[in-house]
Image 1 (cartoon, helix red, strand yellow):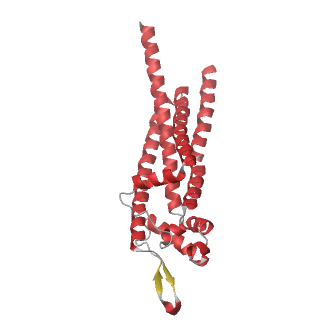
Image 2 (cartoon, one colour):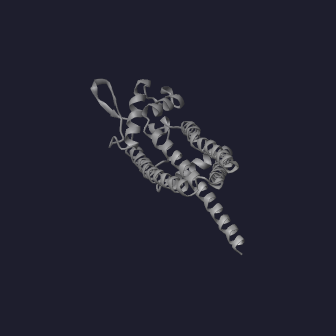
Image 3 (cartoon, one colour):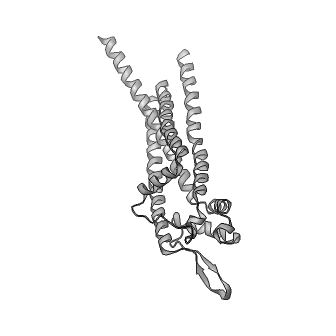
Length: 242
């Protein structure tokens, strides 16, 4: 009976270690994704370069020399460094002409809210990841199950992201529209490229490139976790043999 109890307790501890490892991996990957979004939103130079790449002056009517300032203004507004979303072009006679309509600014206010939410979620996820890491290492750092659980968490995460990627490849426009309908409570995102500079500056190709770059950067976190977990599995096995 005592032996059976010890086996059951070992099984429970092993399962708990696996759950801790999986949670740790998911939290760190979530933190990485949220950080990539926040960094991209605040990088005015990058936004300007991508605007110029996918929405050149002949399509937008905006001179190439104006793109860096528009990119910096956009990034500043999204991340709270600037309070007003508007850019003024200089016209003949010194007149300043606003580039964006009020409803375009209203839509960007909604986007700013999402970036603010992302920042809060980043802080929460980062704190949770640190706490989960501290707890897991304190309780299970010498146990292979912890690192096996990390690999399981990565597989679960990649399965979900893989399904999302397949959906995007099959129907990116449908996924894009669904995201906007879920993320925004109004139709302010339904802009007209014939009249609205904002949508001319940020066409679908702009967001596709943004997503690909972000995904590549975010992959650094699971890659590092995978390597760390496999190294620790090898180490724990070596320690057992000794």
